[in-house]
Length: 108
Image (cartoon, rainbow, N blue to C red; front, side, top):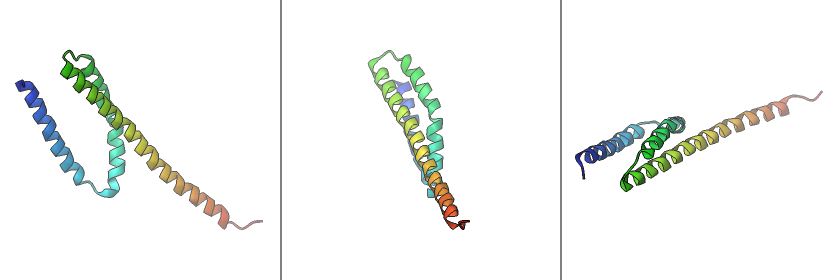
């Protein structure tokens, strides 16, 4: 294992620990909007993973690039799915308010 790969693996593991620590401090009510926003921004990481995977030469680099692109794509799609579900919840509330307002108005 080369020294550069060991450094990158160390940064990766440390970033996992920092990410878990930061996310565990977020209140439950803010978790979904924060998650959907950061997953949508994850598209930038997807572009970076594609660029790096395109320059891969060794089989290990190709596999790591493929895994990075797959995980980034899953994260981006998941972010948009969560955002869509969250927006559907708000649409349901507005439709209920509109329906109850129509029912409460007296007929002429």
